Length: 210
Image (tube, rainbow, N blue to C red; front, side, top):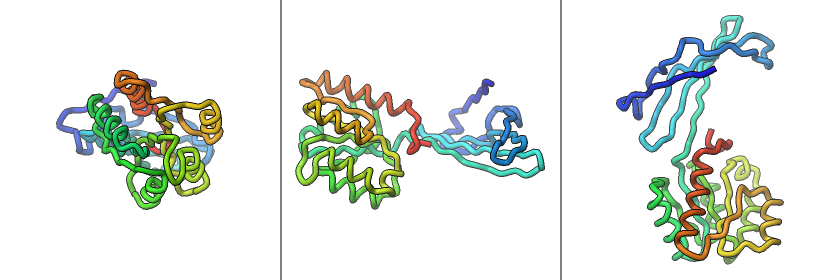
């Protein structure tokens, strides 16, 4: 099945009807053991690139219900690194790559944990160094995994460190991180690797972005 939606520039930031047939598909709803048809009834587009849509489900017994889904890609990038110069450099490269996400700086992992427990934002990505004071990056990741509320936020967690020692990489993936990258030896390498990370997570579906 292919569906074509042709948004108008004037629809940005507004709820608009999709240019789709009233009923776009018919599927079996196993949970209710009866036929379920659904239609996308509205799409809300935002200038920063996020969007949400509203779906109407119609069951064979005549009942209907609505559900909404939101895809968030403009949430803040959380940058955890005790080196202030490196944090500024990473932010500068993100801006040069035309990413407009807010970038929130943290000097250590405990600051990040406090932020995550308090915020109502949906962060786009955590970029974290390995060697930091108070708790290192591996201890930080473990602390997030052990906190059910923080773990359920499902924020992609990527190590972005000066060095990648084998034992640290192995332990990191045992903690189910979503990537481990070296910053590189020069600005060009840093830029290439940041572009790869950001492009991947911009296009990747994950629970925090749905």
